[in-house]
Length: 357
Ligand code: ATP
Ligand code: MG
Image (cartoon, rainbow, N blue to C red):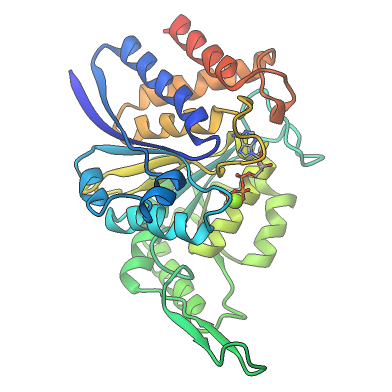
């Protein structure tokens, strides 16, 4: 029996609603496999916690999380608490402390779904965006001068280290190799950003030389954004800096059916520290409390978590069942054209999976 300790942060808004379905899926996986078991520890570290305590998590919050094998996050953020607090005090410290330097976001058009791109409605869209998750444009270096005057200046430095840039690009190439894919795109902007981006390109080329059988391309971010619309079916792996990756992943989610379906993993590939899996979407205050959030992004994140833990069979089963239910089409939440509730869709997936196994 393999026992995994899972730290769970349901978060705010629709976070706890979709997490409930995710935890049901974990229970179902235990039942199906028999050889895996999950020890769940839930933490109420969210914006309510912040309003009461003036911080997003206790002082030893990261030490507590360090004890788990993996972390599951719902969504964080609430009206009244600035995003930079919820992000900078909870999500970023977790990503940094646990060296989750890979943010992996699959963009895959699931069976049963239609892409909103005309002419690509049924294209084989199936690629992965690998976003650098610890440095780059999201650095805390910079400041403001001459506040409130006509001469005011804001400076934000980008930080690209050789260590950080090499490890993310290396990861992207090895991911492609492992999954039998051959096309790697690097997102750049070396014509306009003339220090950090040429550095990124050099490292991309250095590492690319070790994979002569792969087709490599560096595209400027503006052109690449256009290719996401005009030829996404030709992509396998896209590797990008923190900011470029952030933008591309929302775009990637949009072309395969929307945020309700988009999962992500914040991964420490060396498994030295826990990795964290979460839907891409936020807490969606506009639909929170209505019981209509789509739980698929959360459940798919758990499929990614199973892959990460080495149970690819279970990860595959979960994703395949999500596709079965989408293809059948009778149980869907409003964001994907149905009238089902969060728990009806969650149950449909879980019951079908138990039935299949
Ligand atoms: P954040 O700053 O936390 O990312 P946001 O408002 O930018 O918040 P989301 O909370 O992700 O972004 O919501 C964007 C839109 O997508 C909202 O209209 C929301 O209702 C919708 N949405 C997000 N997630 C889901 C979901 N799981 N199911 C259905 N609709 C969703
Ligand atoms: Mg958002």
